[in-house]
Image 1 (cartoon, rainbow, N blue to C red):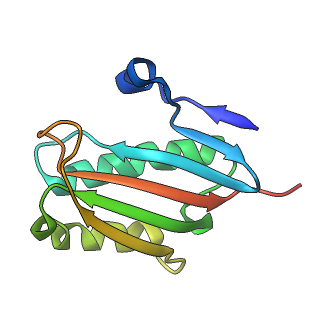
Image 2 (spheres, rainbow, N blue to C red; image 1 turned 45 degrees about the vertical axis):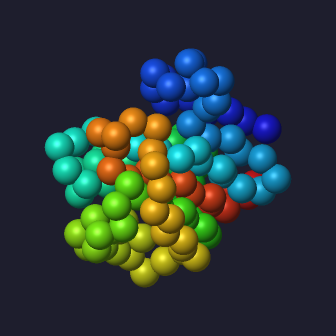
Length: 119
């Protein structure tokens, strides 16, 4: 098992890591990004997720499952082009949930599961 930390403030406060490689998968924790609007936060969350996947030897092409959590479901559609660009020709199974996030400043949280590299 491999644990990946991004050094985010909540990792130490809450007691979790950005990603865990186990059981043939890379499990990336729910990730919020910084920015003034939902699209900027979406892009930044994907950047953080990409870094974790890369450290595990994987990438967006390996993602098999994604969950999007938004404070307001109406803010999901503006993110679609960013998400389509990230996942491209390899779209994962996806779920979108409208919910309260850990801080009202956050508009989107993204969680992914990817296949871990073999060999």
